[in-house]
Amino acid sequence: VLLNAYLLFWLSYLFPSLITSDLKLQVNHLAISQYILWDNSLDINSVLDSDQAKHISDVRELVKKVSLFSLGFVVALLLLKKTFKLNLRTAVKYSIFVTAIFIFKSIFFFMPFFIKFHELLFPQGNWQFPSDSVLISLYPEKLWLTFTVILFVLTLAVLLITQTVIKRKVTNT
Image (cartoon, rainbow, N blue to C red; front, side, top):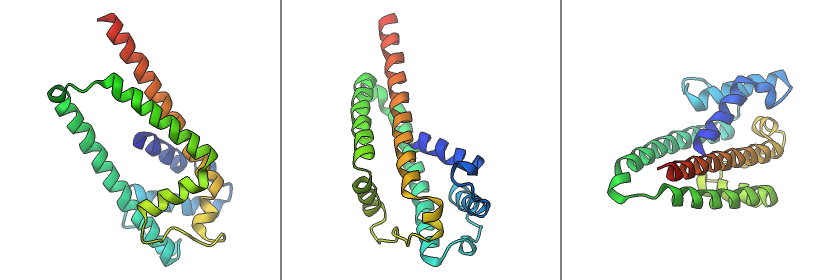
């Protein structure tokens, strides 16, 4: 999921017209994306008000933590695979099931899903903004719904391909 999120985020950075046709908003999107992805020296206060800037700083910290956790998880999985004789087939099967549930929930119950996601990851409450704010103008609900569905569908596709490869390996050995 994380790699697909990065892929979508980078695509929106490379092609800001995917986000908006408004040139000023594209420039704002590029500045925010650059700040989140790699350059914390940017002054996002010139683009956002203080509440929005604080939220984006929190997003940046969250992205860093999730990245480190994901990297650590993959390394631990690779190191402990033989020790615990992890069954990759079973892990992929459960991952497909969980991803399918997330796709269903994100399509049919997006707003409750979106709200719970933000309440969980931003408990200080700095994730709600007026409809005319820069962040809402740049990233409206429809964009997040589309992004979420694409993210989970890509993840499901990767898992299904992985499952097929594993099945072929098992039958060929």
